[in-house]
Length: 148
Image 1 (tube, one colour):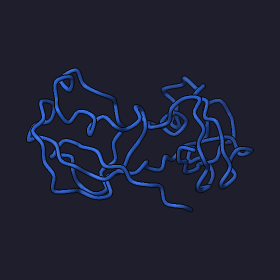
Image 2 (cartoon, one colour; image 1 turned 180 degrees about the vertical axis):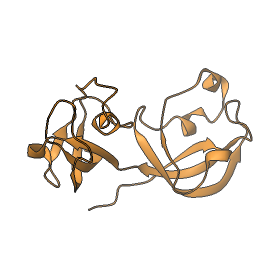
Image 3 (cartoon, one colour; image 1 turned 90 degrees about the horizontal axis):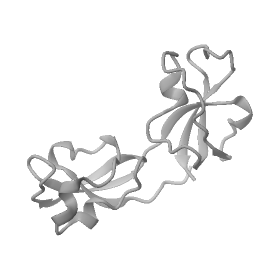
Image 4 (tube, one colour; image 1 turned 45 degrees about the vertical axis):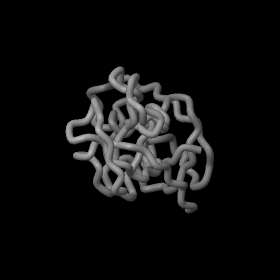
């Protein structure tokens, strides 16, 4: 599997630790007047990222207590349940988040955080069968995805 490129961004100093994963939620209203807002808000909204390196650069920040620290991030892999026909390593698939059964044990894997509905992803690994039976009676495979 090819490594994805890293991107430098800013994150709250308290959260700036290698290995921390987060979903980028977009720009906060307090960012409007910040002189480094482009460095903070250079990620894609709704995507899941993992911090790979923490840098020494630090900035004051109106959003984060203790300011913001520069970090290198990469898009984090996402575990998800998909149909067995789509569970082929290196295949590009379009995720459709159609299940709304929030009380199902598999719901968090059928609608994982960090997946953007309708976008394309690459299946990087097939991890096996679904850990629980789908409430709709469907057979599903657990896979690892990355944005295409």
